Length: 139
Length: 139
Length: 139
Length: 139
Image (cartoon, rainbow over all chains, first blue to last red; front, side):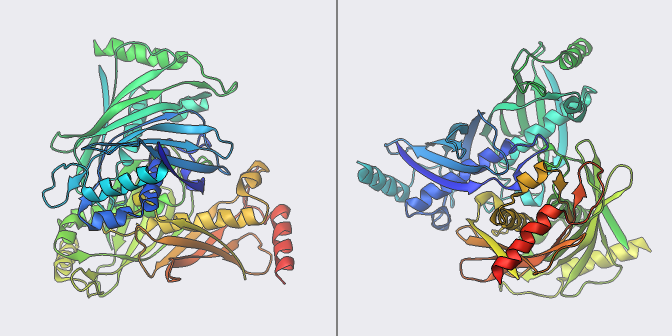
């Protein structure tokens, strides 16, 4: 498993009237970790989109285990299996608080779109390449 | 199946740089439909919370089928089975555009918390009652 | 003064741990009213953007008078003076609750960008035209 | 002037269909800087709220100078004058990108609420104390 993560404090506007981080924000934290993953690859999403590859979200799931609060420092994780993605790309996601407790976790499935044709496509070569390199480096 | 829904236009800030409604917003639209459901029951969430019942989200899932765009009018749906919930309460959720196309759907599972003890509890009587009435009315 | 408005219930995720609608949301409600204004003109923003006109926000101000709560139905207003905008377009904005109390208000200033040159431009003819018609109809 | 700041990357969901960070997010970035300010004081907002002091936002203003994009690392700043606040507390706010360009700036005015009475109050002693200490340290 290859793991990428990013840390940040809870933002005030992310809390709701239950006094906890609103559940929808974890879906957004998951995305922050995916952005960091691509940045760590040396192939950030903004470059990827400029090269004509769009990576739509096919599905998300999120299981909530532990509330997060103002004052918490969260760590959002994106982990991938050490194998090449095909048409679908599964990202194992989670969010931990500063005590190492898992607040939420779940799989996010990505697809790949060819911007010109607007049609689903296999995982593009640029992404396959960086993933291969990551697997290699990790050995 | 008992169905509740609410309609609203896409908001500009909900779009992202792909030019579509950001995927995280559907989790929020799902919640809008659940609020409308409780309002239609005559037992709105704000009253429920005042009476000491907190309804945390246990899990969400969302499958994305069709992008939504600025200019679209969306209909968010919360549907429940015609039986009494126990400790968990499954809501079947979906979002449609003005052409009746399903943009996204998935199940959201709710729990019930006793505010005083802070512990999970069975579905409280107030909610059982309104659901029984809804099932009765629907026949 | 020409006035345009849109109504909607407070959404749960918009509340914060103070138990009120987070102050940043009013800036978003203001935008909802501006979208409605352009729709009422028969010249919705999505068409405007497709015709190559971008309308960036130059400045916002917002004064908070009364908190909004879950359960409230809000009315967001965009009002404009009965004269043709030049390079800047001032929108007088406000948000009321169901009791007619003003929750927040302030002016938002818009500019106009030529998408091709990327440079500020005078108010484009398409918009001048609809505003002239609105002023005429309002007499 | 006492200055406090916090850095973070642009998040994908913060962009809109213009391809830039949506203008409403700067109001939220401003808040992130204020949270950091109180943390740097050693008197974080969560402790402040627990001690019965609520700090509502009285007004915000924001002037937009330069768009922020996905890939940018932003720095949000909260600066205060070196004098004790009275009933109102003015925070000079700004957001810079990684090139030191100011993206947006404006003053945010805070008030103080006594949680028990629900009424506006003078700046509470706990906050006066930390500000005095900050001014002292800064000399």
